[in-house]
Image (cartoon, rainbow, N blue to C red; front, side, top):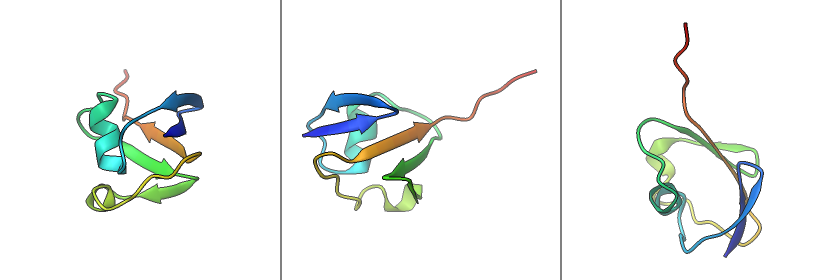
Length: 64
């Protein structure tokens, strides 16, 4: 399926948001949104993706 991940078009096999994170190598704590709606980590397993979804994945940054 074709989605937009962090502004970049991508072809992915994942059917759920949780699977997408694994497929794309996101590890650790991240925040996720699909079509500008926040998706909490507890709901990612059940959140089905559809063709054309816009997914944002953001990881916390440490700075000094």
